[in-house]
Length: 86
Image 1 (cartoon, rainbow, N blue to C red):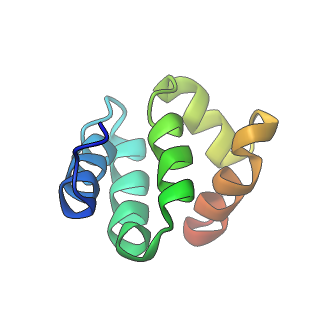
Image 2: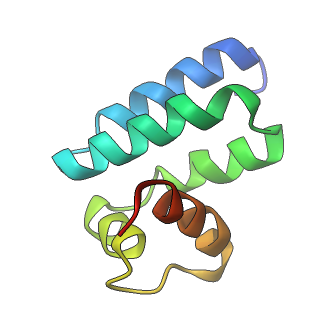
């Protein structure tokens, strides 16, 4: 989506954060997105976009500390976890 403006990308990622499938993930990710996307670097936004493609069951386990996140997502998942507590 190279033609996507930053503003449109933030809106798209915010919507993807809100419409997950597991209510807990909707809440956690929507709040995280709202608080962080406006100031997030393009590279971190790419990583967050990639994270949002993962299965909700896996994401929930990673964020709550029930299972370790893959290395590529480790720092981002830890940030989400710290922001909202486990």
